[in-house]
Amino acid sequence: MRTLFFLLTALTLHAASKPNVLFILCDDLRPDALGCYGSKHVKTPNIDRLASEGVRFANTFCTTSLCSPSRASILSGLYAHTHGVTNNFTEYPDSMPSFPGLLHEAGYATAYFGKYHMGENNDDPRPGFDMFITHKGQGSYFDTEWNLNGKERKVIKGYYTTVVTDLALDWLKQQSTEKPWCAFIGQKAPHSFYTPEEKYAHAFDDVRVPYPATAFQLDDKPAWLKQRLHTWHGIYGPLFEWRKKFPDDRPEAVKDFENMVHGYWGTVLSVDDSVARVRAWLEETKQLDNTIIVFMGDNGLLEGEHGMVDKRTAHEPSLRIPLVVRYPALGAGKVIEQQALTVDMAPSLLELCAAPALPKSHGKSWAKLVQSGDPAWRTSWFYHYNYEKQFPYTPNVRALRTDRWKYIHYPHGDGSADKHLSELYDLQADPGETKNLIADPQLASTITELKAELAKLMLATGLDAQTDKMPLDEGVKSELPDAKIR
Image 1 (cartoon, one colour):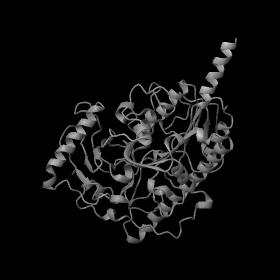
Image 2 (tube, rainbow, N blue to C red):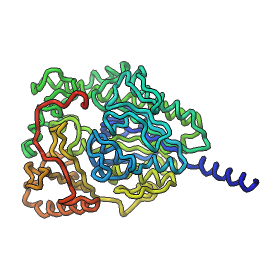
Image 3 (tube, rainbow, N blue to C red):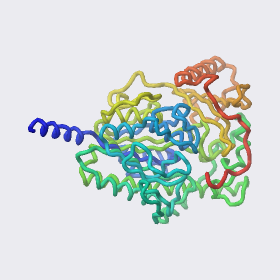
Image 4 (cartoon, one colour):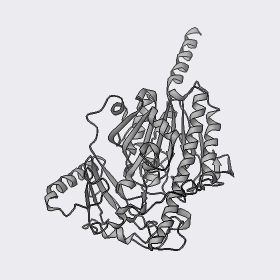
């Protein structure tokens, strides 16, 4: 009996010593919409505090700039062609391992609150979570209908960011300190349609927001960028309903663009309030320093760069995401310059939690990189996106990003020669990607090397000319997407 008592006591102490995980996932969040990433206008003191007390990753990227594929890569550590969620309408496979699932098997209480967005019309609980509260599709900024762990479906009045924080805190307050927990808060913000709560509706009225200069520097770019200008994903289009009459390329119509950006920024202010609330609870319960707090975006967002809005492309604003991690064991006030990816999150968190590793991962844990440096860290990686008939504004994309170069090409989808001009940028000399160097004869050998590196990295994940399946590129089209899936 005494032996059993000591064994149970040891197991309890071991469980209590394992770190909790609080994962705050925002949707379409640009790094430059946060103070700690240099925003001149959006004040985010609570997120900034996490960065000052923890680690800010200066160069984090998604491997597919689209909500569902990116979220699946965060959970699985795998590229989209392997986990299978290659669009916004595919379920995360029940049989696919995920880091929350592995934590659950390792004794963690697990929960998900908010936008999950894998399976457009499915809000049922998913495997690996003790508590799962979500909604169908995108949800609404006000009065969303929630599925409460499969037991009840109801509309909860109020602003989304506040409601999802309430739901998460209600669950956290019920957790025993003798068992570690992993909780996701999936914010809708700042995804379109950008609707701030009333207190922030006019926070940026005095800030002028012009179209970016690169919106008008398209002569050396692929023709499809100009073709996109007047569509759902172009700066002269409806701008997620902030422009009522479209297309509109009049100079004064930039006011609609400005209003859109103001709305986007306003939703971020509420996210910062949410971070403050959860942090305060962690402090009150003395769990702050035993909790790995991850603040992250799922993919980037184009706000007028190269004449585009939305994401999907391989250009920097579409790829870049914020990543801030607070956990005392990682240190404080650190800035990591090396390139981190969405596929790195699962292996990193599993290592920090001393949990079993994924059976397969395309990513790599950044724990060593942060704590002591990692000379073997990546200097290149590849990006891919497949043409969508529901959103026919972006071609198939296959791209390579190194510490210096970016090479982008656009496969047609049937094995024939590319129909679109490729792109090459020297990111050290031209971080804004203003000058396409693809036709520079002096860079011919560099392009050859980059193409070879792209093929090598893709092959390492199982992609070659035979296995890299993609839709046929049917070209940029002008029709609006179905209202149900916007």
